[in-house]
Length: 517
Image 1 (cartoon, rainbow, N blue to C red):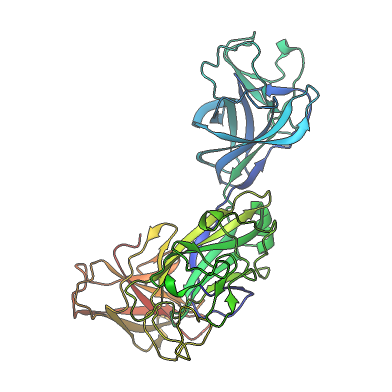
Image 2: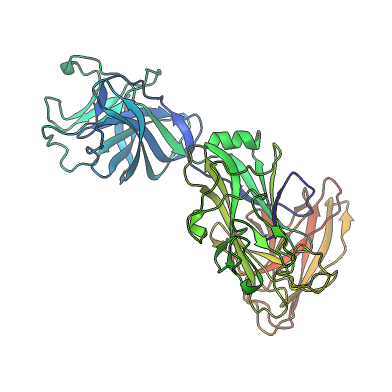
């Protein structure tokens, strides 16, 4: 809840690497429409255009410009699309195909023939195009029986762009209108004119190699961190590459066992989970202070807000960031009283805000819970006075990451296990710092196998050399207990760290039951 976005700051925890954020961005641009009168009729014919990418990319969508009538009545309800191999500088074998619904946005341009220009966008089944390989994109209005071209067909014409040095466009005729069945170039001589050689379109795909998001909990387990960094360049450049005005965060509280202790500043009422966190207007403290209001730059998802029509400002405030780091921090400290039997649970997402004003695009989501039950100085309600300091040493529990991008984790409750780490000794032979971690089941039920120790909050730059594997960037070791860990049982594992900077090695072992992959 007590969320903040900060400038770069020291963090004593390992950033949990989640990978590269994917969002719709332009990965190939064949050119903008040149607004000539002529265009390729794709109402009953396939228009095809070649493309070659400079790097291997996954194509997820197509954007094209076309002429239609004022109501766009020529659209048949979906677009038939095809990716072809190149064969002798023309479309060859079908590599992928499908039908997709399209969205249309009038650009405001009217052609010399009185047609309305539309920008058309549609998604395709993700197709990975190999670098330096020529493919062909074919699109057609998905009308039935395209060989039967009726008179007075409403216009549905794919616009031209200026020649750009690539292969000339092709056109597939179904045997009507004097055109042969099969492929032919658009300057096919029986039509008497050269109608152009290039279509106006773009290919859309993920922002490959754009940004990383790293998750961590603080070493004391009381705070949740998310740090966004560019893979290369700056965060501003990464936003521009994706067509975003900003990166931001959305968060909601999905479970709140003590919502009766929380008051919404706008309404004076208690929230009902799930609810946006922070809510519009912020939270009202017992001392009258309002926190978490507009000064925190969170981009709200209107679907999570209640209470009538909400008029958001046209330009939500930007997150505070440096050129290389955007940091999200939530310190819910003492959000759950010792009497509560449930955890406080959150769902948080990194989103990109499109420049064109479209809805926020969710890039990553993670869920987490908090069961810290300490008390605040002064004996006041922790839930309604969480800005006050925590009584040192009070309470147990803390923050736990429970899923990443829909992959559910099964953390073992800290009340069921004890973890003891030995000291570390340096080996000149292996050039590693070596020690042990002992896990004991102090509960009354078995922990099902396989049992994994995930090293959260590992000092940055330190690597676990004998890791079993990695789950979303965190090294883990599988305990040698295939049948699980029964009540009272303990197991000790060897840990070996590479530490080139000779930094102090900190880590917090978190135990999970079940496979991590």
